[in-house]
Length: 240
Image (tube, rainbow, N blue to C red; front, side, top):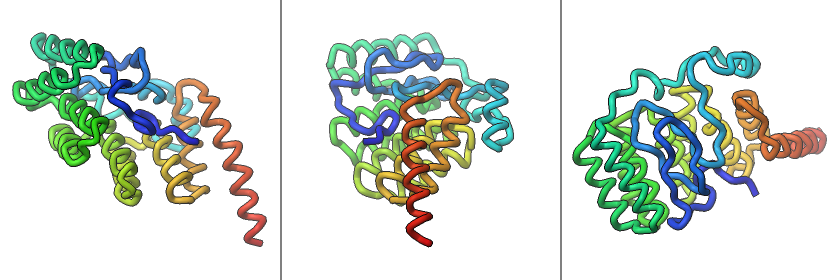
């Protein structure tokens, strides 16, 4: 079974906040950090590419190398915001989700220019099955920062979980319209096409784009590609 980055199976017990500068979380699951101008790497997802990195892989993908818009001109984050964020992390690690929610809400009120707290709230709400609140929080994250690619992905995962595959597809495509080199969006869209929409050639294309954009190898997705190539070939033979 394919696993969507940061969202195939989410439980509150698996939530963890990611570090400020893009490091992977140390336990399964993810709640993204609060800095709106820094791209975070959720657990199970390949690293986002910064300007100038891995240009050879981008060229091989057929895409023009470009910087992730989410990484450009990051605003300064006050020390107090970082301290409050650290407190939210501590509450999550201690499984005090009520306190974590309260601290994240406080961040949204004190620092409305930051999209990360809204994203974190959306994940917390989604994982506690408060889907309406989750959708509203994720939409607010995008209202604050329309370049928050992770918010598009998490909103797509929520919609996919609710069975709205067309809307999920649109959100992944919206992320790729902002930055065509966002590896996680290619991976997750490939899963949507393969598992939920049955569009195998499209799924194969996005898996291949994902692998080309990766800074390293992903043996799991490589195996998916081999499997899909065989299945697509069988479909082509059967259609003739």
